[in-house]
Length: 569
Image (cartoon, rainbow, N blue to C red; front, side, top):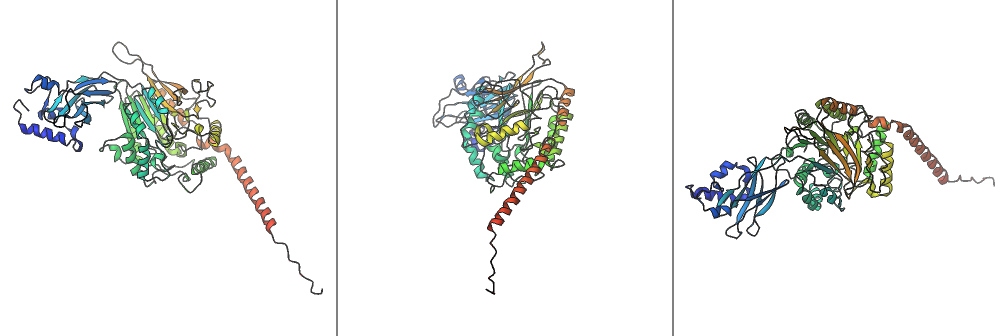
């Protein structure tokens, strides 16, 4: 470098560039890079103006992306080796070029960034920096989420998802379906089959995150006893979240739970993602859903859950869902939060009264603990979102102020309605029988033009969206009261299947009343009690039929008595 800096510094800078792919390249703050040879249009270091111009990166901000371009030729002996950006002085994204590439790339901008600075590195002429580019306030407008994607089936629903231009995509479980008790290699192989779809969506949103459920955890209905749980955590964080190697979510006790805060006060959105598998205890009657030798283990597990709830088995079960470390973390996340909206992701439903599906209802102590924590913490604009069940549903209590408390979207390319036949029939029967937890939607018509027949539920393929209609601001830029969450389930073509509007800015007292209403809702054991008589009658009828059948078979196969010949004859 010119300007009196020793050539050794420049050589070290170039050596660092040559080992970019194996070093902690972005770990140095801006001032250290300047000390190693960072030039700019303001600080040219004695270089000719033309030389500086062709090395300084040009920044164009488009939404959540920063386009970085360098007006520099590319040749095997002279090329731009890399560019990177810093947001508010912190390195956040980088890209390495080959001599055959064009020196242009799009990099992600963090949601809460206020300004970014771009850097370029030439293999001969060191490091150059752009002027700081201010980033205007970017409110979060739409969050999309979904679950249950079978990797062997097409997923045309992604076109509808991307047409909404969401700020974030959240997985609520079952991103893939490997075979039962899958090995880590099989699980990663399933992720690789849908990598193209994941990359397409990831590149279009600011945040691509979420949690696994049982199938992408590795085993149907599995919990803490699953031997492959650690490998499953790492696979999900690698293939879906793309978490850094040093992410705390990789090593913390209790699983991959985590949170993100998007936007800036007073319009912040907090995403709280719960791990309901890694530390979860067994059901009161351990699930048979993971037994591969059963012909239909999922149906068998549902039948066991139904029967156990009907007879109250598990109503006093103290099994845990989250584990002590995650409970402590969750209390901190809720209690100390100043966000205006809280989206709490649980892979399994919390408020359902259906005993057929896996849910927090089968862990009544944990369910009560979660709802009591929400009542106590009173998070603003809180909404539970869940997956797993292969249909969309809006859940809440009629007594709850301001509408629904939980929104389930499940079935991106695998819903109980898309299968047809017996699965569709059973799904509709169960939805009609257990509906005490369900809230009616706002009257949006279904794809055929008729109102959705199941009230706040739909069995069609679907994904969910949460639109945020922020309140207007006064003359000083402060939010007035008002605003709402626009909650919708969409079909394959984007058509709304369900819709609900949840007001924001309710205040602590009303927020506490919402979750008290959830605590007062009936449980799966309350709603299954009426089945006790029919189940007992059915068992007796089956037993009686079995006894009669055995008696008939015994009589039919009984050998006739042998006649004794009269000795006298």
